[in-house]
Amino acid sequence: MSDSRIAVLGVGLMGADHVARIQSRISGARVAVVNDYVTDKAEQLAASIPGCRAIVDPLDAIADPDVDAVLLATPGPTHEKQLLACLEHGKPVLCEKPLTTDVETSLAVVRREAELGVRLIQVGFMRRFDDEYVELKALIDGGELGDPLLLHCVHRNPAVPDNFDSAMTVRDSLVHEVDVTRFLLGEEVTSIQIVTPTPNPAARQGLFDPLIAILRTAGGKHVDVELFVTTGVAYEVRTELVAEKGSAMIGLDVGLVRKSAPGHWGGTITPSFKERFGRAYDMEIQRWVDAVRRGGITGTYVEGPGAWDGYAATAVCEAGVQALQSGQPVAVSMVERASIQAGWHR
Ligand code: ISE
Image (cartoon, rainbow, N blue to C red; front, side, top):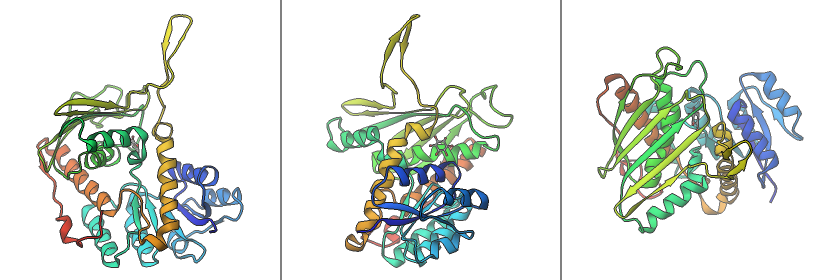
């Protein structure tokens, strides 16, 4: 079978990382088309990859007959149109979060995919492919610790861009813990509250940082998340599960521990999500490429979180942004999954 020809739309930080990944570490795929609103960047990148072209219009890139599947790393506001185009052309698509930027358009995308009856959309929640999260999920599902009761999460970034505001902390950062909660506990999130302690003096004026998010699930489980995106230290993501018969923690960054003069003991912490979740991204893209290649036989072009998961995350984050403004718990408003189309969603 020949390699799947991928169009990567948006070749900024994440998109460029995925292009490098597909070209060097992923088997069964090659980057055939790149696109970016900064056309020079796309052209330069295309010129460095054998057999790759830059296409100026993202919709033309999706429609191109020499493109088998699409990886969307474009800005969130462009996703709705691009996802619908992928569906209309029957092209499998891996979409970096968010699915879309509001609940209505996310739901419209979920509904359109369901009408077509083929799973074509995968959402880039890469933590589901991280070894430690996979292990924690297996531990929960194995039942050894009994029923999960709580999750305590920490999500720290050393720094964020100047345009990052508190709503982005919810939509861009907390969104991962929203997905992790749904993945680990297998329940929808039904309400969210955000607490804003005294801000870090180093945080830009107006950015509430740190934030504490408190989530409640359909089964009444509690999840708290410390979000601190201006630590100035390193990238830290931890999750602790507390269950009936014990607890378990991941994300301790316990790699190699070294002792050296003068009196040093310790290891290293990853500087950003690109390093911390590098292997998870590799796994995510390889499994997606494999699913795309098998799709004609299996009837699904997705291996992992799909459009529904993207919709659910958008709905929780939308409630989260309201909760940020009101300081009160806000109920998450979502349609029943069964109302979409019985049966074919995971
Ligand atoms: C970024 O967009 C990500 O997706 C990272 O995983 C997250 O840790 C970071 O806070 C976000 O800004």
